[in-house]
Length: 391
Image (cartoon, rainbow, N blue to C red; front, side):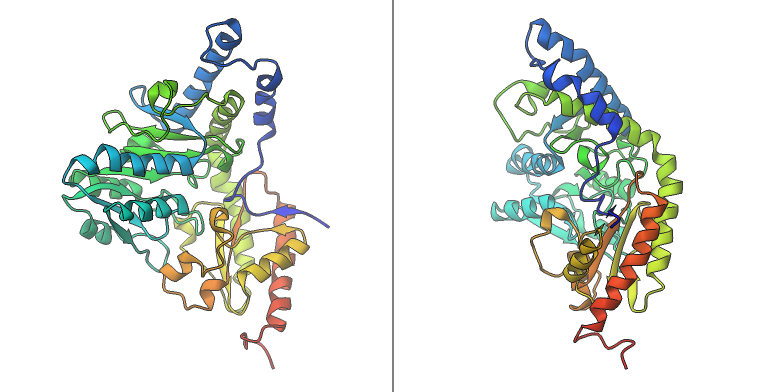
């Protein structure tokens, strides 16, 4: 049985080049980079190189900070909780604007901040799964401390108008944060062009290892901290840096940027081929305009087929997919994206996300095109709620 991995928005394989680059730093060059002896000194140059690769990958300036951390969930918490401590507690700005479709690490942190008295506005998405700029303008006020909007949605792949949203925030004196996890390695990410104050990312979403990420802080923006206890990362994040993972993430970032033309052409073509095949299935729809999505992502709903049932059927036949964010995969509630765009309750339980990478092959897509319609037909044949096509 062929195995096809179509869950790259949950995590990606480590690029073999990245794995090779990390190898010497486990058991040969394993010193603490903060140590003064040769074991530490020999690491510092490699870590500086990795930091340079990361700065270049998002077009950060030398004056900006780039804090290496454990993941974007940590970075998102650092920004949101840091703004509470550094800005909201000491000013008249007690308001945060975000969206109803952010990653759970943003939504849950905002829920926590609400318990501390912070006013949170959750913007809804339109039927294409995107954000209307007028709703942002109406929500942001002189009381807003922070606007936090993801660059690209993790479930639909919808690309949000980040540059315009940042301009709206800046016009009202608010800070702007974007979770760029699902954008890096798929589309161009330029922190300076959009004038983000904070930008977060996770290495394992662009073929680096799990357990490493980054937080960009624009020069002049308030310094935000979550973990205290040392002078690591200029005092912004205590804890000895994981040298092998940081070196791996630096190279992965460089490779991801180099691969953007391939993503825009070959990966998009393979995704479109799969999407076109799925759209031939009756009573199936895909969320979002394909030209306004990242090139690798499909969120599809087939009426009469529960998403979890379809996942199990696909898994038995070697195809890996998901019903949405892996960070919320144990929550069997209706898909929040489909609920947000106004889908009925039945359809909101049917979503399945398919996400490709630059390692996805044509043969794998051809196999998925064979397996997915068969699985949907099998499940519809035994469905008590689906009447379409039945006699």
